[in-house]
Image (tube, rainbow, N blue to C red):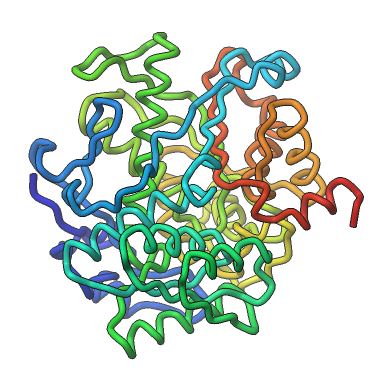
Length: 406
């Protein structure tokens, strides 16, 4: 199997090696306060072999060999049926993909896992990144298991629990007097000066590639519990969901989910990419706004950044760094966007906890809020997956607000 980076915008190809982050010619078009230009994708040719990581007898092609991954149980999280929600809402094939079960309580472990493996393969001992909290605590935890030094740049407004996680894992914490966007730029400057490997989302293509693993798990798990339309291949049946709801901030998670389903189609394990819904908060909805302009005949326009303001801190960004790339995926596959208010997010957080027993952070709760808002457009017998990406214990203060305790 041959691996390389490819620029979706211009088709340029590059080796997967330290120091390569963006497509050079496309990155030169970068405009201030706009999504990244030149975001790269990991591409493979040939049959999966040495460069794959295995779990539960299915193979996920990845650009780093299994022996370099840290010794911790990342991925293979439950896909389960919330029976009371199914009955209440009248959707008998509603599922929750529960990534609150990851080692650090966050979906971001999937990206950190691959970035750490890449660092170990290439003899790199330090990784730097900016984060609103989850990516930082994730990289700190995975880095601890891998024996790597982790330097994080975190807004001062990040929830206390996430800052405590970073410090408990032994990472170096730089608190930034500003937004995630300020932290992003400071972390890039640090990486440029020190030569440290950057794990910044979108900027490092491996962050997208690591997140695709969730799509492989969904298709395999759904094939085992829902035989309808499943393909029978070595390793068991595979099935694509009809609808997937994903929390969206900078656009990297949804791009990774798309990449996973695209790879599954390429491998012949499923026949189509499902319809994916980008769930955004009203106070941070740049990708949804851009998609709306595209759906009315425009090109998909990211205008002047709107200062973000939402209780869903994990998806709160002024400039979605992977916005252009995520928008292209949504347009290519007929994806949709749904925007929800903070009131709807906090109500959905309590709804998910009280009816399904799953305590999710506000950003994750956007998927239930989004589904509740969009369900009139979805067939009752559709296979629907809500991707829940972070534990509610990471931001208890917001949950208290939703309960009227603050």
